[in-house]
Image (cartoon, rainbow, N blue to C red; front, side):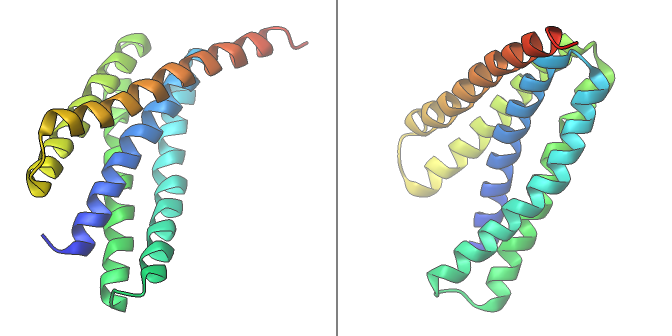
Length: 161
């Protein structure tokens, strides 16, 4: 697999899973609003995908090892993978009650990240369980923290006039 595709796809997919799960869990905990969660996913799919793509672009430029074409390919692959994978989280929210949809989204994110982790471990010739555990642990930490921050924000908004 080309470097630019590997970098853009793996970064975009990982960022889509972690950022989108953190956002939807936090928004669910604070608002319990399906519309707010869907809006958040759409905003992440656009704004954060563009932000991550530019971040990869600058990062690849700073290495001073890649051609302009490779840099733009990494930029494009990052945007497209982040955008499309973030949008996949809208489907469960549309199909299920919000509480169930959040659980489906978490499961979907863990599955996607597990598949990517296995692929990366194989490419690197390392044991897959360590890579999987490391990546999933980060997701779980993000989900737990954003849940509690969402609860805290929801409690603050309840006390506002």
